[in-house]
Amino acid sequence: MKLSMMINYISDFQSSAKQVVELEKVGLDMVWVAEAYSYDSISQIGYLAAVTNKLEIGTGIINVYSRTPALVAMTAAGCDYVSNGRFVLGLGASGAQVIEGFHGMPYEKPLQRTKEYIEICREVWKREQISHQLGVTRGSMRVKGPERTSRFSR
Image (cartoon, rainbow, N blue to C red; front, side):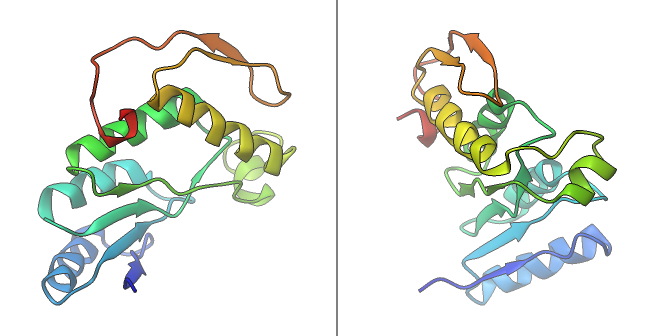
């Protein structure tokens, strides 16, 4: 069994990061970084990856409305790379209040959108051609780059 906690996204990040470092020393296995109305979770993930050694670091959650699926996949691969394989991507639909009220996007088909993000992320990590015409996410691109940049591309 693993032990995890959610980092407080409202208070002082520096204090929370120091707490995470100390909790890693006594056996915390994983920390989740949320994003809502304050800071993005990705910049905090990068910081935590630099100040911890074995702790898994996950997004709790990245919503599937404010970033394109390809960008989410690229960002996750980058986080996994800088954390030496300790990153866990948490995806979710969030809620209408955040998506419509803060991001200004219609909150439509959250389950279908999440499913498509998962499929596209997996295609990007495998370096497959992405061509989705399923409904809520659109696009076509060929992924090029180094053979392996993170465990996601294995």
